[in-house]
Image 1 (tube, rainbow, N blue to C red):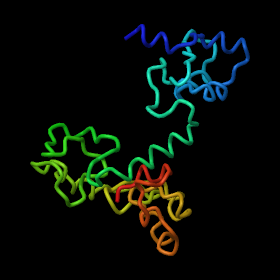
Image 2: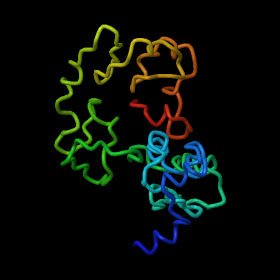
Image 3: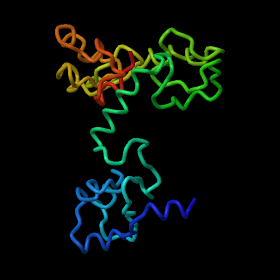
Length: 205
């Protein structure tokens, strides 16, 4: 495995060496460096921490990842191809991140994990109903005076983020912009599985 990874690496450069060459954190991001590494470089660019300069099409903190798509595609084209490929996926199969607090959820014939948006929505997904337990605790959440309480799940957001534009929903259920969304095209009214937006990736509905 280490031999494979070494073939993916053009060279390794310390933060101190990068700084001496006047390399900026923005340049690191352009070279497909992870965001957290670029942030650490911005905060302490004289450390001995290493930046792994990856050969195309590899990326990651140690050049351990690559997209399964054609390496000549741009990042935008890869994202678009990935989203377009979802249209053929059965709708009740989770293709998103796993909700990590359900350890023993048996989904029967669906072997994939539950997405966090599939809990507490009055539909049992785990065979023993673990995904619908303790939901009243979410509903009892109280928010501070300067916070807005989202309708679903008891999430709190700063009051300044409520009603600030339908395209900038901050509640995971979109309830902070519900009045604005009622008269405009909203993410809730379109097929989010086929839309390239970060907001769609975070929808509950």
